[in-house]
Image 1 (cartoon, rainbow, N blue to C red):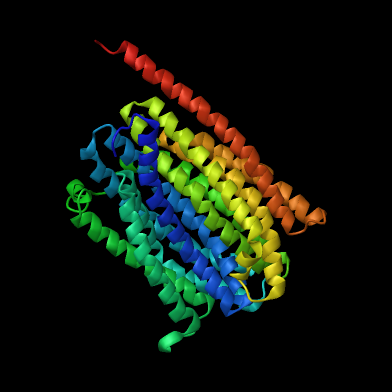
Image 2: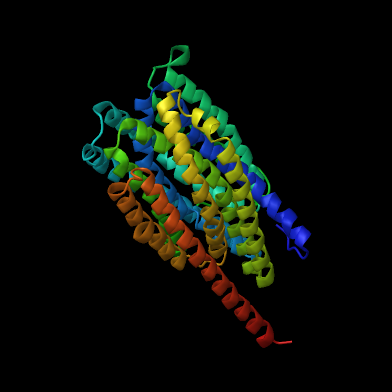
Amino acid sequence: MQPTTTTWEKLKQFAIILIPILVTQLSLSAITFFDTNMSGKFSSVDLAGVAIATSIWIPVQTGLSGILMGITPIVSQLVGGRQENKVAYQVNQALWLSILLAIVVLAIGYAAVPGILGAMSLEPEVRRIASQFLAAISLGIIPLFAYTVLRSFIDALGQTRISMVITLISLPVNVSLNALLIYGLWGFPRMGGVGAGLASAITYWTVLVIAIITIHRQHPFSSFAVFRQLRGVSLSAWKGLLKIGVPIGFSIFLETAVFAAVTLLMSNFDTATIAAHQAALNFATTLYMLPLSICMSLTILVGYEAGSGRMKDAWKYAKLGISTAVVLSLITAVILFVAGHQVAGLYSNEPAVVALIQHFLLFAIFFQISDAIATPTQGALRGYKDVNVAFMLAFLSFWVIGLPVGYVLANYTDWQAFGYWIGLITGLAVGAVLMLLRLVKVQGKFARQAASSTVSAPS
C-alpha cells in the first residue's frame, strides 16, 4: 500500500483492496451457498438438516475466525509504522492460537452437539443429517482457522488479490466434491447433505496448503520469513492479539449466533418453513458479503493510515467505504425486489417452499440496507483498534433489542416466523445509528491526539 492524497487516489486504492476481498468473500459464501443449494436439490429434509447444522457451525466458525482476524489491524499498523521486522512474530503467535482454538472447538463440539440436537424438536432424519454434517465438517476446523490467520496476514499487506486467487481455486474444488459426495457421482458414496460437510472439510485443507506454499515462496510474503523462523508460544503476544481479536470475534459471533438462535427457535415450525428461512438467510448472507468486504477493506486502510498518523486520510477512507456500501445496498435491494421469485427458485423445486422463500426475501431487503451502515462502520473502528464499544453495541442490537422483539412478534402476533426477521431488522437499525455515532467520536479523538503530537513535536 501507498499513502494517498487526492480523492481519486483513495478511490483507486480502495478499489484495489476491496474488489479482491469481495470476490474472496463471495467465493467463501458460495461454498455455503452450494452446500445449501445442492443439499436442497437432494431433498427438503437434507436442506433442513444442513440448515440446523450450519446454524450451529457458522456462529462458532465466524466468531472464532473473527478473533484470529485481530491480526489484520496489528499487521496493518505495524506496516504503516515501518515496523515490518515484528510482523512474522505476530503471525506465528496467531497460528499457534488458531490451533489451540480449533482443538477447543473440537472438544466442546463432540461433547455438546448431541445434547443440543437432542433437545430440539426435529424429525429423526433431519437430526441425523445435522449431526453427521457437523462431524464431517469438523475434520476441517484446524486448517480453516490456520488459513484465516494466513489470509489476514496476506490482506493486511494490501495483497488481497492473492487471497482472491487462492479462494477462487477452492470454489470449483468444493463444488466438484459436493457433486461427488452429495449425489454419489462416479461411484462415490451417495451421502446427501452430509457429503456437503465432508466436501467443505477437504476444501479447507486444500486452501491451507496453497496459502502456505504461496507465503513461503512468493514476494512480498517470503521476505517476512513467516515459516523460516517459527517461534514458540508467547502468552504475552497472545494477550495482545486477544485484546483486539476477542471483541471482534464476539461481535461477529453475536451477529451470527442470533441468526442461529432464530433458526433453532424456528424448529417449532414445519420443515418447509425451516428450509425456506434458511434458504432466504443463505442468500441474505451472500448479499452481506458486500458490506463485509468493505468492512475488511476499511480495517486495512484505516489501520494503515492510523499507524502512519494520517488521521484525515483515515477518516476519508471511512466515509468513502460507508457511502459505497449504502449505494450498493440500494442497488441490490431493487434487484432482489424485482427478481425475488427467480432467486427463491434457486433453492428448491417445491412450489410451497419457493413461495415461502420469496416472502422471507422481502424482509432481507430491509436487513441488508441497515447492514450497509453498521458493518463498514465496524471495519473502520477496528482499523483504529477501537473494538470494545462495537462489541457492546452488537450485543445491544441483536440480543437486547432484535431477538426479544422478534420472539414476541413471532409467538404473540400473526407475523409468526416472519416476526423474527422484523425484530432483527429493528435491532440492527438501532445498532447502525449508534455505531456511526461512535465512529465520529473515535475519529475526533484520534484527530485531536494527532494534532497535539504535531504541535508538541520539536522543530
